[in-house]
Image 1 (cartoon, each protein chain N blue to C red):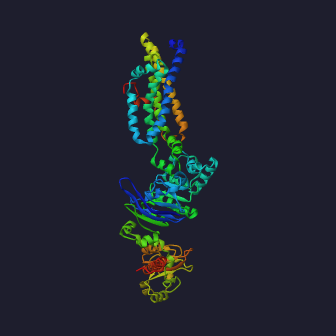
Image 2: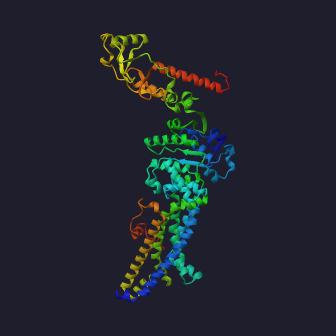
Image 3: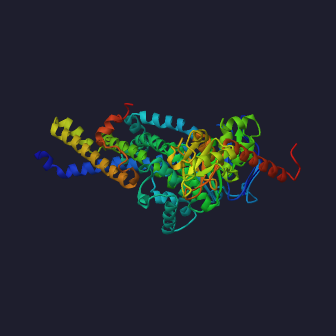
Length: 388
Length: 230
């Protein structure tokens, strides 16, 4: 665990880079520091490995004041990844990765063995071991940077804008890679970025800073999107936070409609009766395996001879995008609903069989339910005192 | 041509002397430039005043230096080598500083963040990365030092410069041309050795677009230092 206790960094001349920062980074979690340039996020990061020393306040790692440690020794126990990777141009990939183990006195052979393990871990081809950094692409270099930071297996990993120098596609794959690694390694990660999307994607918690080195809000991405503390945070999160936060709400809370579903062997009359009973304008037609076929409008059944099998009636529209209520988020459900011509989306199971149908009304109810639950949880966390 | 064969042992001796008088100052210049460059790269406010001093020294005419030095060191090799050392220093010292400054900031930061102390960082990161720039300076210093040795002929210790003096007095062109050719050959050999040394010392630069220009041409393009003419 990393703890900031009223940490201030004031430069000669009076500029305050970080102002009375109190922050706790739980062990094994990813904390993202985010904000515009000049908000003190990078300075805060660099104070953790004493690249910058605070003017006042204390920083503790696992309860130990870092000011009491020798900086070089402290740093060997903290992985560090920077924007341009900062690889040593004169060393091969394998020796770049082996840097910290070699510094801490491992034998060359053991350090290189460890480096090769790490190349595998971060998804680098073993053939690259003997190459030099300039022979690699930007994305590959950044992977080497991550491998180098992890080489001595430090419990803490600091990442300073690690993915901002690569193109969006490579950035997305590196972010996924970080999530995968973190699920496996459980490091205490502090990551600095100016990209709120990145923060929300990779952070267990996100700390939002404002210019002048003030921390404004620390919360899980989900709570941040649901309840920004002020208009600054709200603006910073962007205009579509309402939709983005749905990524964090599971679709399994949806109350799916199972009444407006009809087999293709049913007659038009039976289907019409079913639609009227359910008050539905649309019926989802399925086959004998429960696979979706498409939508038929209740209005069209009126003009269809009563004993015609649905299989012989032309469908009004195809079933559109499906989603998985058991594994997807409400955002995926909403997306499928928006894309559907009927304003309803089909939820399927892992074999593609229809489970039920959702609509805007049902989505709204599910969001409401999630918000109520979150409010109750927050009230309980605040000691059972209900919020005013 | 027959004159050359008749005097081959004298020519060999003069060439050896020229090499000795040129290379010892380069070596001493290197030994002084590296620590001086390190100090000036670290405390960058020092760089400008120190550079002014070395530039002024570079502008001193060799003849004037000889006159002053003879009083202390007499008509010896040392009297020739001291000005050459000063000239080497003037060329090499900025190269060392430039080389150290060529270390990219993210690389330096990464080294600090990984727990390199000051000295280890210098030895294992900064100096190796500075090597190509330092060797580029060393090549210019070496080639100019080899050609500048002739100036020592003013006090009778000038390596191949003797051939110019002697050839002029005897109005014997062959001797002068031979001197020029031998100086160029000596410079080419020394430069080739340095290029090979750079390749061996900086394997990461292979295929990364090193300097492929002819050594002599390069020295010419950079402005061949002439004693007292700067």
